[in-house]
Image (cartoon, rainbow, N blue to C red; front, side, top):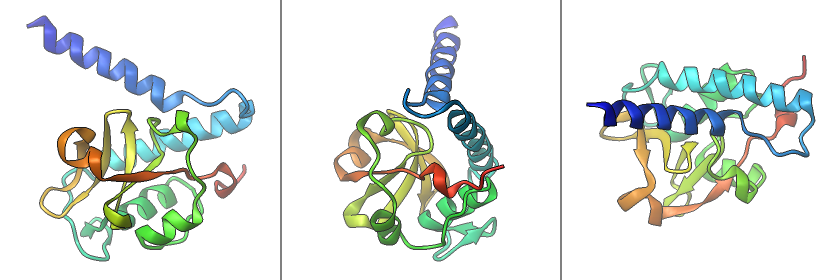
Length: 160
């Protein structure tokens, strides 16, 4: 009975650490801005879990993978041009090794035909054609299909 509660608490603790962790070289203002943006992005993803897949979709009637990325980051105040997965890969900077398991980093798959948002070192959010907006784990199917990781630079976030 206590094992599931312990597991849930440990998962929440690990996720919170990844949600708020930032490299030491990032200034305090940038660090705080990243935390705020990530919190909004997380809430926006949570509110869309289970919504359907739709080719070219960018709203709650349905999303494709890059449409979800565009919607949640744009709604969180990030200036991000709507583009396909390949264009995101080509225009965004590569994530540093310590950013690859951090919430908000983008993870790319399958010859740049799919993209998701890293949740933690073990899972990510994306849009599945069969499940819609969902969380998936890297084990088994997705892990071997990872092409790499990109980050949304803070310079794209409007300064207050």
